[in-house]
Length: 505
Image 1 (cartoon, rainbow, N blue to C red):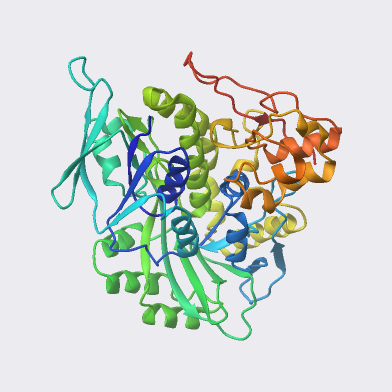
Image 2 (tube, rainbow, N blue to C red):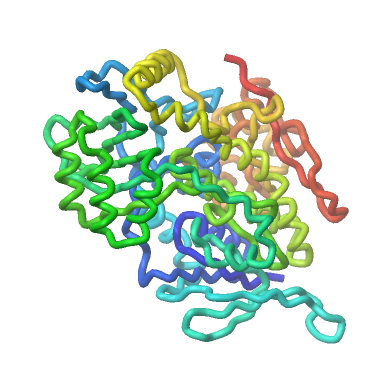
């Protein structure tokens, strides 16, 4: 029986989970406190398993078309020399490793628009509203035996849903209520890094590279270019904490003054960056926060994306984690069904937790190393980065997790793959074509390949399995296609997650 689902937040995580749940037939309502889709937001990147999640949504070609053509990252020294160039790598490589620039860099507003366009016909969007309060309602023998959740909206109305998903960002009101009576479960931490973002006009000599400049006293400045006439400035500082915190409690002018004072004398393109700071109308500043907690759900309420496991902007994985988390959450709900929602939420936590823990490993000493204090420390960091530029620098989740690499789970309940014997008779080219974007474009058309191949009863086949099948020259006989690990204790389902051994260099 379809569920009635309320989703708080129309950023990345909210529309992404609505996409999957609506395809399962659930009635989804996305509630966004802004009057329309947010046009603000700077450049984000998709990495590793998030790319596969978008591919499975059938949206990868669209994302590629809207991608920012950033060619890589250049680290600039105090004299303006650009000796350290780290070019972006192919995300489809066997190692799954990428550099600082992903091959799928995209403006946040464009990614949100893509997700909105893919869901607007099947999902209800209600703008200018927010969820002020919720209350879990336990089922009873006398009445409705199914648990529910009651939400109170900002207009004073109350509504009943089967599930409430909090995808309303790191400042989530729903999260605050969830841990109000158990603050010990909320293990969030401030990183002591203060950041500011705004746009600036592009000049003729600004090539399509991200430029990163380290100044003494733990300061960092970056420029990135997403349009022919416009770019972005990122200012980050790991000092003057009290000064920044006082400014963040005041107006925008006070915040600009604080950043202008701290970055005075930084060198490089100081005059240009400070001038753009003064004129910026889209200035935004904040202290970097990492969201942690021992649980992500309570009753029929679950946290998703930054509201659950924001790793902080410096980790560079926020949008990717939101897309992965949305896919896993929807997959677990598909497996367990509406009668076992709590078990699905527990499995969602169990599966995502190793990846989240890895992405949130930002020791203070490592952060300080990225924000050098002295000229000598900057030179030492640049030597390390120069060495990395000759190889491939790993992102957080490309490292090993207990000797294995985290791989996106396969959910046959909401995907497609050929179960028929006709699959074995398909020519190699026909089978391998399903790994291309053409497969993704026909994601929700199970019979798309039937006319040419006489294959029926299709569900999705994961790309790594297709590659393995092509390499071995034989068909896959059973599901899943990699080492299974059983996480769920639920007797009604088999919870399997694909874990592949670490790739050899």
